[in-house]
Image 1 (cartoon, rainbow, N blue to C red):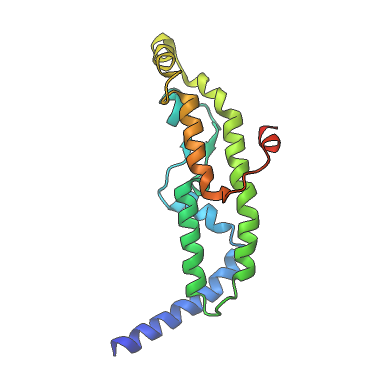
Image 2: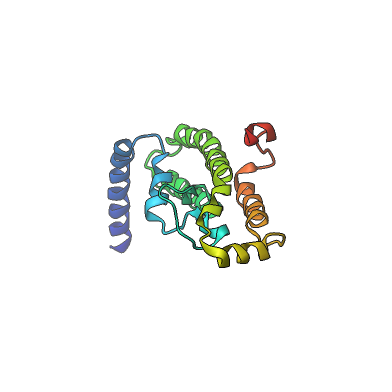
Length: 171
């Protein structure tokens, strides 16, 4: 009876999934937005590097879906969705579309964050905050070196041996 109950439940969930995916759109980009809102993963913010000063409205950040952990979660969600979908292989085109969208969006998010990074200085209020940053500036835990280390770690998740051209990333 348990096995029959599970089969019925699985069948019901697959039927629900077959209806919900078209409602959300066969475009799987909505999974990235879901990760940003529901996963509990934090964004990468200027405060991660410059300290907890006064945040500016609309301050630059890298969304959770564009972090290493976010990418791992996205891949896991896509895999679970594909395995659970009632028609095996039916989401192959959507997965390919997500991959085509994700890579440039990922690098774009990091490029925007890197471009806005110097604005982190604006978070520093008062002589003491400046002195603390100045003391760390030339060390590995200074804001710039910390950013370079974090970017190397985070970008590796998507680079797969092929980073975008340096010129394009710096412009």
